[in-house]
Length: 366
Ligand SMILES: Cc1cc2nc3c(=O)[nH]c(=O)nc-3n(C[C@H](O)[C@H](O)[C@H](O)COP(=O)(O)OP(=O)(O)OC[C@H]3O[C@@H](n4cnc5c(N)ncnc54)[C@H](O)[C@@H]3O)c2cc1C
Image (cartoon, rainbow, N blue to C red; front, side):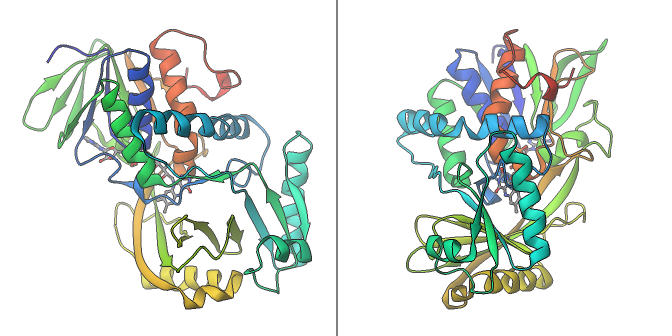
């Protein structure tokens, strides 16, 4: 195989988005994935594009999240044009529901911080809430409506990204376990696979989620990226009970067009122990039934656990590293689906020596 412009390690949503973006730009890309694309957190995610709901402080993280969320409509259209797949991008909005005056006060403070910055974060009374979502418990006292937040279906997004990237010329080498990064005189020279085969690229991008710092040679410490387990319970009804994504105490609900509803999630630091626990299923169901009592009638179809790439400061690592020719695209924690389009664009800018997307300069690794 001739040396590609870019080698990407990991075919989660981040690696696939980068491959798609670079291939569209006409660069040659090879993606190395030990399993199949999207086999880890990226297909397990709830798919909320919760840029405002998840941002409790003003600053570069909020700007990055908004910039990425606002790229999704075009991205979904591009993917449909390239593959025919509807990734179920729906600008349905997110409601943050309060059950006590104290919860309402905290939520209003969060909303005020965003309204002050010109973002839509609208306080909703209990009666308005029931008009919008009649299935929500009558004990709710108020809500905040983030009407621009949205959702996608992660497994469909992953399938579309992979097909679109391949269609544009990217090559996926599945079943390729990366054993180490070969560094010579502080320059990333090659990737060595299990079995000893070596591949090199003009640039190498590490997008291996919470495994990124476990690849020998990658300049990330053991605490730089850690797995944070999240569990999800899936329910199925004959038709969608709620239209929007809904957050309440101890749970969020993310609907699908086909009547499925994802209840999430936990954040647990238990290493790579892939378990669904009785306690988590109990807690998620209890919180969800308190939020929407009619969920009691739905079928419990599945549950699963996966690992988010957590970083201590909550910021992803996107950009250059201390090793020349090696780029990082990892640590997206709770928002990797949301941040995938902007991450891909940032990596494209660096690889092609172009200006970074507006407003992302302070989010990039030097
Ligand atoms: C329960 C849950 C709910 C979530 N909900 C949301 C949500 O609603 N919205 C949102 O934006 N985000 C959500 N997330 C977070 C999101 O899923 C992650 O941030 C995102 O998937 C990370 O993508 P990634 O590509 O970095 O990592 P991953 O999806 O983990 O992909 C990394 C890939 O690298 C491969 N790999 C690793 N090591 C090697 C190696 N040595 N050789 C070859 N390949 C390797 C893996 O097999 C894997 O396919 C959720 C996560 C969880 C767990």
